[in-house]
Image (cartoon, rainbow, N blue to C red; front, side, top):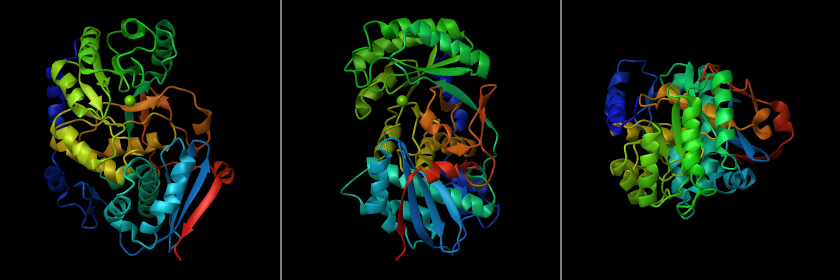
Length: 411
Ligand SMILES: [Mg+2]
């Protein structure tokens, strides 16, 4: 079975739900629902609370966030991983004052204020920190309402199909193929993503010939009925990406991620128009205007917001709504097993244009191991959306106790 662009477009046509249709579909449901700027309706955003304190708990790659309101309610979120100490400082220096004293029900306005107040310092670290505030607010809503975030948004907790995501380029093709087969047989994965080219590689491979050896070796090993995705991490110019794309077509690859430097939208659009393999991208993008351009010009076929890079669930929902208008599926970036994969499960369970699978890292990582429980588990190739209130997981108190704590409070 070949994956052609025509098949792909046919398959995603059913995903074309516009935000006005979303709003209409919600009509008649409980009046307590409020509508987000993205068009999604949400329950449980009752007014009348005030954000009293914002704490960060920073340890290694991770900074957890705890929000408390003046009535004693609390919620946990997480700042984007890596260099978390820098992002935690941004939280207290550049974000917290725009949220303290505000009603959490004004989440759209809070998020927008945090972005606009930092207009001289746009995007990366501001959005990484903002994600911590935003995700803690969603947890707080869920806990108050005794529902999961997925349910607040009208979804239903259930198992979601996952693809096993390899993060390695230092691995020989035969070794990569062997470990994926093992994971297919033990965890039931029916899809995998492998790494091709070199990160921002200017057309170079990790070592000469690796990509041309890896893709057919993995395809042969995992079998024709397992989906194969590849990620080029901004490696190629358009001519080389198109050349590689032909080889990917021959190996029935169903997703080519970030073929060109991600900021070169026109390059990516050229590749998307030229090859039959659906092109995916957007994980690094955190400017919603850039997202609008990317989607309007159809630079990619599949959009991949990272909930933590883009500034939280509220902004990721706006990207998802733009994609829905354009009949494009969302396969978010969630490349580690810290909270981003938990957040992503809830998003995928709630949006009408969720793509076919969740990104699930197959790399062992001690730093995410004891962060929260229950840990996410792959069973029969699927991962369940945690169904407890809020994000449905409990942050490990021992982990918090061992972390560096900072607090911003309402004066
Ligand atoms: Mg990627």
